[in-house]
Length: 227
Length: 260
Image (cartoon, rainbow over all chains, first blue to last red; front, top):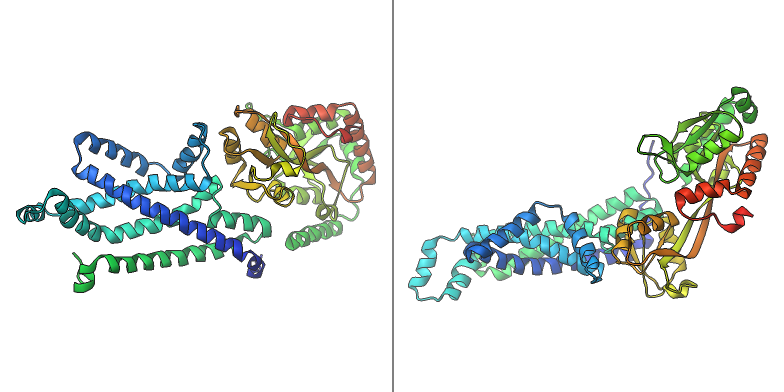
């Protein structure tokens, strides 16, 4: 059987595609920022916190990294509703994505923190820096710079994973695609278009992170060498 | 859509060419003393298998009722939703009793008896809330299954409602039970399933958006069979037997105008 492609029938839906792309980007951006902050705090707690906190964070990381994101999303969305608080699907989606990505960021950041040699911390102490200064200048900033590529891939994955938020009625790109294909019966064309859009989004996100990296990691920009 | 029509049309043409002298189906059934009915056992609650792996469901019981009325054994020919028309046209079954909605596309290639049941697209809301017309839905969270007929009907009719679309019926049911939506645009079957799982307030049908009747499908040009089936459908709608089957599996009565 031959298949007649008909991409033109999708053209009238471009506004809906655009709205889907916009929501996907919003969900990913908010989850990335909150996920990074939360993940960094968890990593600090897991690397240098009191023993009980290390165990709590460790348990959290293990639970989240070993359960499917879809299950976490359902638990957040329906779990909160059962408790009597009704949240918007987009809020629940961001919350679930943050809970998920914090665990992954925590592990990536911990690797970065643990890669800093103790001798460097001691050097900071010799220079008379206080604890907070040492943590910021000697540990955290170089640690972030070292694991930056891993973080970027994690956040690109996050953007792609946001596609399953369609399950809980968040009208992001995949949800829009599901609706359009059931409207037009042009499922093959719809998913090809959406696949290409996700591909383009990945490149845009990567490019944005690359630019952000140049801006933030001045040492690398000036010397052109990795840490 | 065009492709499907073309295919169905092609099949119809092929079958008329292949079987020009096919005997009258009603006579064949009577002389064979066996009723071959195409049933879909993978679409609860119309057709399914019970815990003992025996066929059951509203369509199965309807077929049994018909076979009993005609005093002959029933032989189930298993079909799936997309191959109902081909099975009928190639003579693998005498008729199709498988929640077969009557629509124009299908009427081009096959005939239908009078409808014996309906699939409804309804707006359901919690008991006790007043919902008289679509205005009462404006601004409310109206849950539905994305891309379904219910979604399309509600999107055009309930303008101003805040549509909340889930990917499948199962998620919609969970949303109803956990109180994520105010109202839903769905089928009474889904609503009853949700009510069976103890939502905070049980749902009830508020507005019937559209009714899709379904009927027994037969090959074209079977006037005798069609008349016999129509008589049987009318009789059993009047005496309440078909309604009893419908109510047993779908949890609600057939529309009053069908029973009159």
